[in-house]
Image (cartoon, rainbow, N blue to C red; front, top):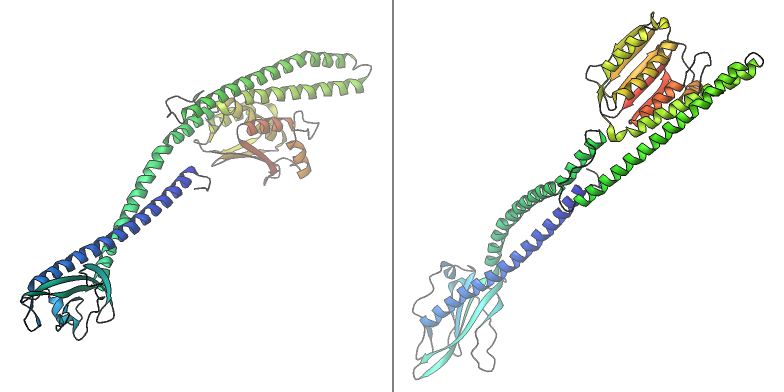
Length: 444
């Protein structure tokens, strides 16, 4: 998938946005979880503080005692992570067994006021605690004495809960990301479906199976389809005009060329050298007119009307025709071409192109012409005298190679024109048989 692919760009953008959204969502959920966890922990601590406030008793001598201690076993385990402490102004401090020989150091009351708050303290093992402080007054005979109650929990317990939450959250977010990515892939596929359909319709137009693109595309794509249809119509009309003009020009030149040929024959008795030159130039102009007609025909019915045809029937028909010529009766035609080999062009174009190439092989072969099929092409070889690289370049430009055999070079030039218009390529090279090798290659 190339970097210019719209599917790739949409996929990368969607993946980046999904990853960013899930990362932000995960961060937000962790922050919310931490907040909720602290609130829940403070509420639990506050309930324990209220329980202690209801169970604390202040004796007349100022001693503090609890009628019932909180049932959580962590309060009875040294450094168990859950702690309580009750202290009065002049009374001995009560502590949970979990504090062991340590004390919690809550801040002193401000101006004698009673305040309840949540704060951070240092634990007996040096860890950080989240604590709830409540200042209450209990009866002491006829008066009331202030008592400070502190209940705290180690933040490591909250961190363990957070780690458990993350161990569940991360796989859930990964699974959600995969599900969203799959949904985005399906969405992109469906969103680009009209363009795939448009490509298939354009291929049908290109191959000549239809003349215009169909309607019924989504509103966002239909204007493009309409513009393409207008462009196809304009191109068809332009090709038709070009073909008509080329035909008119060619037909208009035929009469003057015929007159020149007739005049050359009339003066052949008195000026044979001049007559030969005039006749040769007239023939050259005639061949150029013929070539222009071929190119105009191919251009007019080219890519917008291209069809495919089987190669083997055309070869069999042409070889059967060439065998009837007097100088081809002794030639051996060795053809190894698969029956299913197809040429992406019109049957008439292939016939004219192969006719020129096979006829060229017939003219120069001594005893043998070999035609070999390839996955997407043909090779035509003969055992004739062959050609040098300079001569090959001369023929490839549509020039005559040897005046002794009429048409040499021009038929190959016409075949090259046809091949070029239909997306094929003709290359010339020395043959292993000693003659000329012609490779015709095309795209499937």
